[in-house]
Image (cartoon, rainbow, N blue to C red; front, side, top):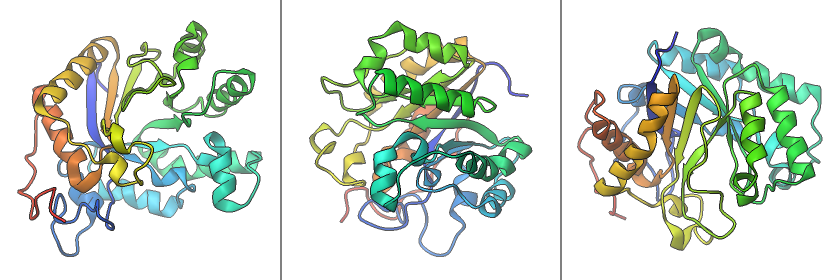
Length: 288
């Protein structure tokens, strides 16, 4: 049973082995290691993003359970077929028609985490173009009904949702956390802060690389290291949630060259939480 006000701080994903934004040499030492096992020495939670692209094999998920210590919690991003139908169709060439088989397939992938007590939350992230209209409301309601057996967190990014007080009412009805995000702001962006709507809180910090947010790739978009002053600001945003909920998740998604774990440790220090210091990086973050 989780104590009231417990906080879990980690990163969005743990495996960044390739490309210019790799974590090897910046967070992970060179050589053969099990990355999840290594990661779990420093953090008590992680957000799984690979599940967005396809439901993970339950055998792999069972292995994640065994590799992590007791009390470690996973947050799992919902399959894009449920939240990003156009992206799914572009990736697969198939129309994103949801069937009961799809629901069962995704639930089966969660089963090892759910049975072991290591499923912290299920994250339903919707695209910035997902608007608060009749169609959007139907999709959101369907996701809330279908996956209501889990702790749910919903990331909405279009301002039409925060402009409507009924959004919070709907999320409260299903005890679903409205994800509080930090990212570059644009005219269509959701409000900087949204109300708490569940007995859990969920924060995602994407960085503030406004210059490359729309023009950068999946690595350079997240090339942003929060400053000590900004970490204090983020800590001040999370503290009220600790007082008003029984469980809070905070994930850093600024994953360029291990920025996310560095900032996650910095936030833990700012909140006066126990910290396992990161090893000295073999490379400086700005080395090419």
